[in-house]
Image: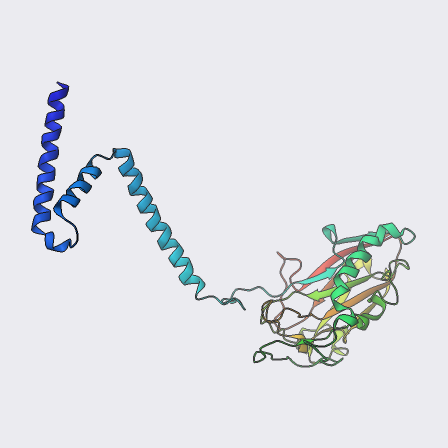
Length: 315
């Protein structure tokens, strides 16, 4: 019975080969360089492959083609993107407002007489201001852009983008130069504020209608003003004075736009230092700081979009 099955299989195999060979003879002109015998041997080898190997070969070729299509699509997409700037920025949110020192849950708590309780804040501010040291801003690509707020600096035509100087010494009491403890020892701590970077973003100075009364007489036309105040009614009167250090009382427009890490690697964003003078001891005070601009918005979902809150406790 086994022999009979083998013979029947051989007979069927012969019929299939005969059919293939007849087809090859008719179309031999389309296979230059290959004889019918060569193709016959290939067909015999193919027919002798186990089904599992055939299935494996099919999926290897199939998934190889899929991978090739995927890689080709990604490469085509990458050709449309620029390495220097984002291609699509139509859904970028307004910039966030952040501060140094940062802490868990935005709480700054320390004891005046215990240096170890505020040493982490001092270290954080020293590290952050390292790039702003006056001695590091000599020569190319740094340039003087004025000590008063001015209009935007368009550097789109510059092959190597210039950088406006922002000297650490301009922060005065909060520079860490005259007072290495940034006021923490005296119970008058400093906070450094910055507007987060967005490539090609040009913040617009606020109109008088959108400004608080306290700011309208202090602000010049070419700046994004910063204003801090106690957030709750019970916190009023718990801080003797709030002082601002930097260029005017905000971020000057001549420091914008920022062109990205590739084109603007040495860029220094403008800073604003705020000092809370003679904070009431033993009481938690909630403070809110805001940036004001016509294209700077606030969001209840993001507490750092255009503003931030801190809890300040001095013991």
